[in-house]
Amino acid sequence: MPALNSIYGLFLDPDAAERGMNALRAAGVAPENILVMSAQPFDDYSFTHAGRKTVMPWLATLGGLVGGTCGFLLARYTQVAYPSITGGMPLVSPWPTAIVTYELTMFGAVMTTVITLLITARLGRRRPAPYDPEISNGKILIGALDPSDAERADLERRLLSAGAERVKST
Amino acid sequence: MPAKTPEQINEDLLRPLGGASARYLTALAFFAGIVIAAFCAFGWQVYAGIGVAGIRRPVFWGFYITNFVFWIGLSHAGTLISAILRLANATWRRPVTRCAEVITVFALSIGATFPVIHLGKPWLAFWLFPYPSERGLWPNIRSPLLWDFFAINTYLLGSVTFLLLPMIPDMALIRDRATGLRKKIYSVAALGWRGTPKQWHRLESAMQIMAIAVIPVAVSVHSIVSWDFAMAPVPMWHSTIFAPYFVAGAIFSGIAALIIAMALLRKFLHLEEYLLRVHFENLGKLLLVMSLLWFYFVFAERLTAWYGNEPSEMTVFWVTQTGSYSPLFWLMVFCNFVVPFPILAIKKLRTITGTVIASIGVVIGMWLERFLIIVPSLSHKYLPYSWGTYRPTWVELTITAGTFAAMAMLYMLFAKTVPIISIWELKAKEHPTSDHAPALAQTAEEGAD
Image 1: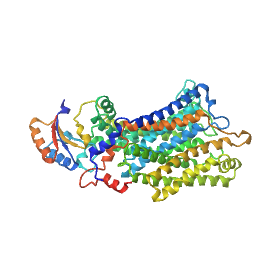
Image 2: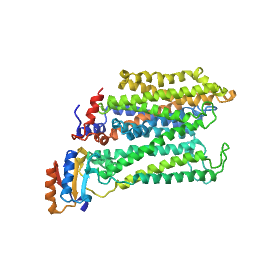
Image 3: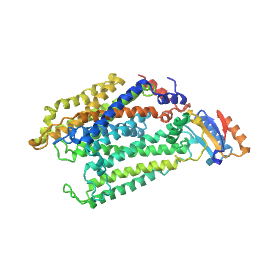
Image 4: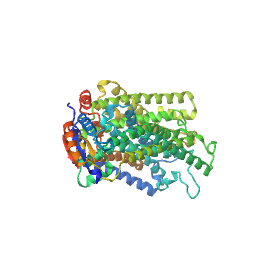
């Protein structure tokens, strides 16, 4: 499977991983073919800066609007469908309607956030992908996807000279 | 203390997940026994009817609704506090957040069962839900009880996801170390997490959005719970102060519950190097602020009622100040203010033991507060001929005890299944480079008990 064809180095510290990343860039590996994995987010390092842009906040807002609209319509329809005057309030009372609308706005925003996370972070996918369990012990994986046989030796040398503790091929 | 390596952190925080000691199993069996007894009591109530409980005219809301308000309030321990600390970027929060978020999910789930228990005919609980029945009947959306349905479900969804999302990387960590069936289970729970930058960015974005969304939801939940009371023209209930008063009380009891849970985890899971004195001290300071705020609200409420001098309100006022409910009222003041204030205000006393003693007082005091809001008002409504008393029966007492046991049992089971401290969040401040100070070691030195 092409996704499993990779060469990567395991780095002990983020500074070395940064050097490994620069080495791969210098070797001409396309950004979309560079593999990075870690057991913690290293936000201060450039090797984690790929894929930062996200529309998640906008989608959450949209989800909130949809949820709020549904809440308003539900509250309104409920009061009209079974017209019962309560406490001298108008049939479609603004306060209860606002409360239900508000709660379902938040419900929509939360649901959309979770769904967006699952989809955009590609969680729950069953397709095999390169991975090394040593990441769990704090190692940082920097590597290249689909390298040609000719490139492998050069990439291995570059990763090792950048400070990789070990280089693996799949 | 030297900075811990990622392997050491893994080792320390995954250790509680392996095996169960005889002491653990005995405690679990003890709590499970009480929970089973509570289920039996509930079964008897379903079989024999709601009459086996002590609620009767005029007090139709007794222990069950007291417990409902108490547990929903306690649920503010986690998600709300965790979200505020996360948005404030308080780094000391990292070992605390998951302990807190778990309390929210379990307390909220337990609290949400009480309206159903209270119904007497729990099989008709679905009548509360807004759905188009064949009779054309819809629940009355002007009733605050229906607002609870929306608010609690939204908060439960938010809290569960707020707890589960940051657990995904830790599930992957356990998956990588587990074998056999455990590996399969944790593989499913890890959702294929690999720790790519994109996954980290998305997770952090999601947590940020959730933190922003969940704070107003948490405030709305307990406001709405307070409006269950404040929307009714019952003496001492119909008050504009109720919503903020309830929210403050909820945060107050929530912090207390969190401190107790952290102290137990620290002792029994040997997390002394992670749950430090500085965490208890910081939470103790928050508890002190909430204790003062609680006292302010009680004073403001009482003062306003006293100056109003409205006969029905004054009846309830005096029955709690000097009458039959006064021992409970003054015990509440003692537990919520007299005990915690000096302990938490004096730095020397604000130790781990001190904050735990104060917290136990607050949890007891806040339960009493919920009881004193509900029962004296209902038993002394406007016309003296309708006055009455309330005494809980063994059924209510057993179910109440069962909920506390259920909380302990669920928490124990959770701590055996998932790292109770978020491992990746703890490591995230441990970048072992010259540019990044070993914060854990630094905090440990500052906060060593």
